[in-house]
Amino acid sequence: MTNHGHPPADDAQPAHDDDENGTSPTHAEGDADAYVGPDGVAHPRRIRSFVRRAGRSSEAQKRAFDELGPKFVLPYIPETLDWPTAFGRAGAPRILEIGFGMGDGTAHIAKLRPADDFLGVEVHEPGVGALLKLIGTTPLSNVRIVQHDAVEVVEHMLPEGSLDGVHVFFPDPWHKKRHHKRRLLQPPFVALLASRLKPGGYLHCATDWQEYAEQMLEVLGGEASLENTAAGYAPRPDYRPVTKFENRGLRLGHGVWDLVFRKRG
Image 1 (tube, rainbow, N blue to C red):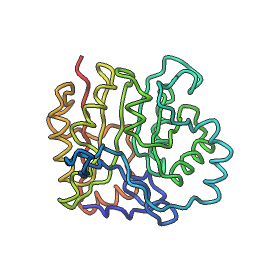
Image 2 (image 1 turned 180 degrees about the vertical axis):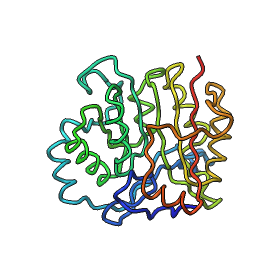
Image 3 (image 1 turned 90 degrees about the horizontal axis):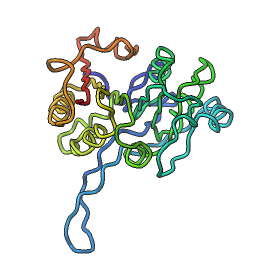
Image 4 (image 1 turned 45 degrees about the vertical axis):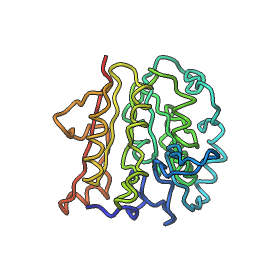
């Protein structure tokens, strides 16, 4: 399989990739560890979409943050996001991307699909800075960023039936069995994402870890409001770029699995 956590930084980065400075970004995570409440009973902790990792922004990323952040980075506010105001237009399809890493894939897709509006959620500051650089140099007008926990963004800023699509590309596989509970794509979070999709809206996930792909297929297939668009794994949609790291793995016989489910009408 691919080398989880250490691909090069000039690609469209998976959520579990390192940044251009060699430090680890935030990882998509479902934190299900238990804690003991005041009643003496163990309760599961709430799901979080990330684990904080050390990271240092480059000067170019900091400059992009200073120059473009005020326009393209939206504050987390626990109330419904005003999409037309945020994006400066109304009526465009709305796509959420969770954990965009260094943003190369997000920028590629946003350039390819200028009629759609993309909301990227990422807590890793170098990644936010890197995407802002791409927004400025491409340039792109259809991307906005929220630097906050994706679970809270989905819960509080995105109402039910408001999204046309959700992208979750290469979340941290947490490949050790004892860490599987930390994976982002667990039934409660999939149900939450499904509730935010419009009828006919899609949820596109991708992973380069086979065992996680199998779990994704089981979890997504178990959500009654979703239906698989393929008989198992889906062909890679044309809009999702193949990274240099991914190409290298494919040449070595490593697999990548895409799953595309749609919200039932």
